[in-house]
Amino acid sequence: MSILVNKNSKVIVQGITGGEGAFHSQQMIDYGSNIVAGVTPGKGGSFILEQNIPVFNSVEEAQSNTNANVSIIFVPPAFASEAIIEASEANIELIVCITEGVPINDMAIAMRVLEKNKTRLIGPNCPGIISVDECKLGIMPGFICKKGTIGVVSKSGTLTYEAIGQLASVGLGQTTAVGIGGDPIIGTTMKEILELFEKDPETEGVVMIGEIGGQMENEAALWAKKNMTKPVVGFIAGQTAPPGRRMGHAGAIVSGGDDTAEAKMQIMKESGIEVCESVADIGEKMKKSLETI
Image (tube, rainbow, N blue to C red; front, side):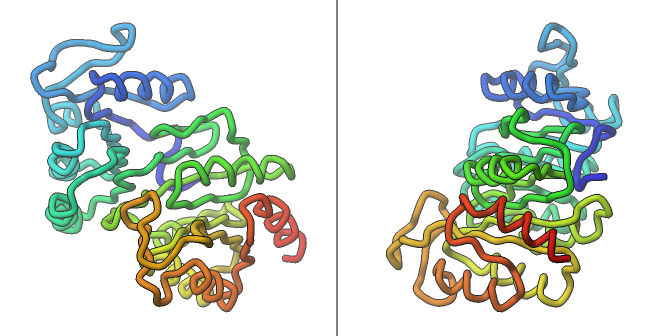
């Protein structure tokens, strides 16, 4: 088992003919992902990636011809929200948007459409999803993952990879790793991913990596306190960030309340989450947590 995607997911790539889209599509295919079509307006009827993948003018056309249920988006920021809306209106169940820098006003409009159509969005500004040995969507390096029983959810792409590396160093593999994105408006929250991991029978523990700014980690921690039966290990990036300074992600800005690293770590501890002072402790903490179940 896994969450969100698996070997049966049928995937279309919006922006497949661009440099990023074509490169990462080939990487996803090489991992074993079932890429069934691409979408680039004006290039319908052509084929790409050694003439194996058909290109359509619209998501609706691609979906009706392939029965795709997942879309991944590699388009410039100015067009990303339109791409999200188009996929949602074409009855795509899951959308993963890699694009960074999508305007907040555009995302606010897109979110209303997603809610109306009950479409799940991962991102924007995220590294994507890997369900290990089944399906890779996005820009995460597949070779670092090893099949196992730990779920990973993170706002940070790089720290997702580091967490996977730390788990592997103590012999722990993963079910699914999800990078939810670091923008102020994103489609799926940490709490929602924890809910999915809690329901997944194959996942035995979860690593949750947050960062300064916002309330998402606090909301997830408080939900976990009441609902999680599986051990959760947490880490908050930005422990040395000064208040009021935006750090890296657009959403990583501290106003000085309970969105500081210190405050979030305290709430996580009070919620029964094993909190790491350093990302290098993630593997060992998770191993110990599993041993004490």
